[in-house]
Image (cartoon, rainbow, N blue to C red; front, side, top):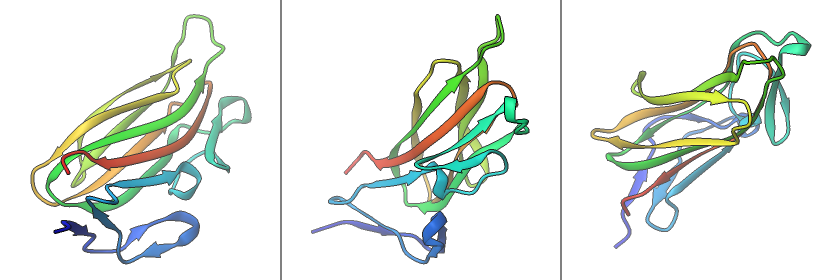
Length: 154
């Protein structure tokens, strides 16, 4: 018997617009989003990602956020792919990443120059809306590449 989880409302999928149903199952436990498909408050789309560069005067802000997808109870791995660079002597922080459930930050960390990935395991106790976010701090260069959410307990 295949266990399935279905979104209860629309989820934003960038170029694909809004889709009313996203299905996770034991045979399809993975959601992948290229950063250029997700909403943003700074930077510009540069497929397959989104780029923010202080030299181009991109302001601080969310480089990508979403997918605003409801997840059923379970254990999920959230992985961010990006590239981060900073030329300022002695400075290494380029931005930060976090994961929210129901609008509450449950985990996160700093993005340092030279990093290419970050992630965490998130336990969802009751059905909750997940949002994975990459924030550009306004200095250096940050290119958000992708966000992956994978069900781990099937």
